Amino acid sequence: MSIAFIVYVNDAPAAARFYADLLEIKPSFETPGYISFALGDGAELAVWGGHFDGLTPEVPRTSEVCLNLSDGPDAINRRFEEWVAKGVRVVSEPSDEVFGRTFVVADPDGNLIRVAPAD
Image 1 (cartoon, rainbow, N blue to C red):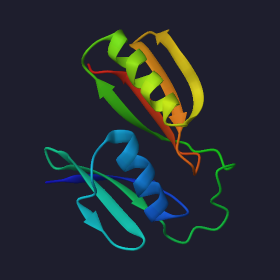
Image 2 (cartoon, one colour; image 1 turned 45 degrees about the vertical axis):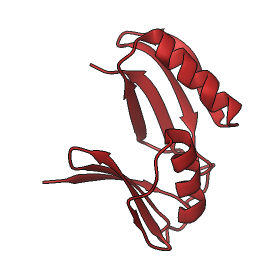
Image 3 (cartoon, rainbow, N blue to C red; image 1 turned 135 degrees about the vertical axis):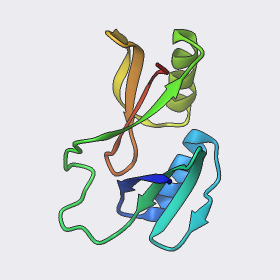
């Protein structure tokens, strides 16, 4: 079995470039409107530029993609600084929550990306 996490975007190639740069990985599958990235163990992250009325960066999203890091709070702080240097839009600066150090950024379409510690 495999699983794909789909992020809805307005421009799939532009979103794929954003995620490829941010996560430092290359797409494993590409079409003009659907591009996916193999994450290992049967999991994929995909961006889909399907036709969705009213989908703009201003529309609040109800989910988020979470990248879990296993090297502690310093690794999370370093990732935040790396991503800020790439020009990402910061939604929530690094803070300590009940589950550990975390921060949230947004992709160009307003989709949320959280970085948090691995369980």
